[in-house]
Length: 257
Image (tube, rainbow, N blue to C red; front, side):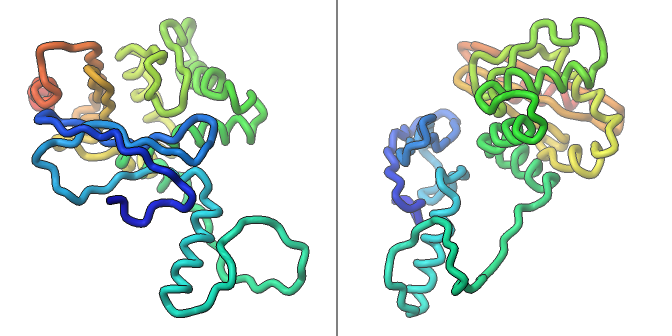
């Protein structure tokens, strides 16, 4: 059972159990409809209670719904269901103002919990604020433009194709060499230590970010004590399980510590 689902959202459960490790994801349809899909693999020995982190399709109505439910639980009458809209009436009472966390904290959530929707929103927000592209083709223009400016070398975009902000699309093309150069170069930025490096999750004793798709596994990060930057991408592997592939990567990284 799903505890406290977003209002007006129909969730279709397509999860499968397996003896292999896997990931659980909640996907919303691209047209913004209120139909979500639970997809992925749940290990057979997983706890019956687990969390799925996701973005709700309509945050405003979700907050209004939660407030309505909280008032009713505390025996405060609410005459109608929650709605979202504008009003020109002067007879309004401000209950609260909730501000977004700073970008440094959002980056931490993006990297550590892998809330992929954040990546899409970051790129589209940059496009909206700068006017460099439309929201539709923001990943195609914003990220390559930044990489080209950051690396500041000829042919810096050779072999790089980016079609989304989260990295989930199989149409993306990025080499380990290009990614390692990007990770190395951003160390010169004033925001690197406090905002970026500290946001990386600690995996196997190192600051690194993981990425997984079916038969694809990737890790990239830093061995700061020795000024090393590393990037692994293993695509379309067969005959090995994800834990075995991960162990081989750990063995290499352990030798570099």
